[in-house]
Image (cartoon, rainbow over all chains, first blue to last red; front, side, top):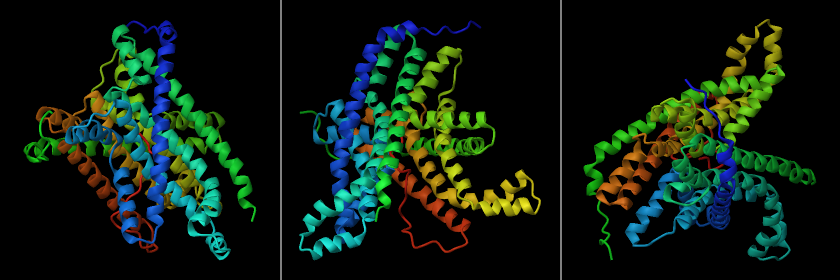
Length: 225
Length: 240
């Protein structure tokens, strides 16, 4: 058996292309997060609303989106919905929508946890002062909830970033796609996938560390009553 | 315009047997990889809690690595990359199960660690005082109490493993997602097939969480607060 020789040159030669792919991975994760932040808030507010129908719909949506694999959702949108409605999604937007839908179910729970953690007395006091319900939400409750929401949001982003690596299967030219295409040409999958893996772990571990320090930082004022 | 898109489930029902076969394989993969992940997770959790510093560092690096990696990246690294480097030929299903087990063990070890740490110190002290050995303490005092605490999170991880098993389709494991892709292409009914696959995964997730809910109930002597039965949880972050 011959010893395998790790070809660093391949990584050096294709590093720029890999980084361009990484940019797309990050873009798509951010696009997914943006959808998740907006849709998730709507779902959370529906879940917490007094209307039982709205609450039920939001609860079912959350369960459904958490119960379906991202890959199935991705194919369902990119091939299924596209064929059924005669639409044409770009791979990027199909990926962002799939990530956004999954993410919104997780974000809805994050928002719900954060909003529930704000002392109900705050809301009562705001209403007693004559603020409207929307004002009480926007000016009193939400700003306090944000402190609790931020760290788990960063974790959701890490999850979406990891999920975003799968979008190359529908042809998004992300980091993994670049690694695949180049290794088909040069037959060096080990080098290129290793490089992609190391980059991904470095990013996710760095973000997780950031989230952890953020939690410590934001938690400092939390005990001030 | 291409074809008129009438919703037609007939092709799906015609291939029901194939889909169910794929579904069975997906459940098998999830179950085997979770069993392996629990075994690995316990070892890593005990290493993290050990008094031997290098074991702690090693276990810490292990959890960071496998929680930071995406399943898709790891699976193609193992199946396409490692296979070339080591000049071995892995069966897709073996590569898939090993990869799923490694990733899930990273998450589970953290769960187990916090479960073990959540057991009151006094329990260990009392067990030591009556002369039990370390192994005995773990087996008959800390373990059973920790088990109760970690059961829900382990159930969540199982649910995630079922969902994640769909990714094994990229290396050609003929599980549910792979069969669905193949059939959707063959009949050109992507909407029907992917909707059906989504429903199957959803039902599996619902069923497994239901079983774990019963298990949780069995493990705890207290009556469980009225949780809604047909609901489930996954881990707190989207985990693929």
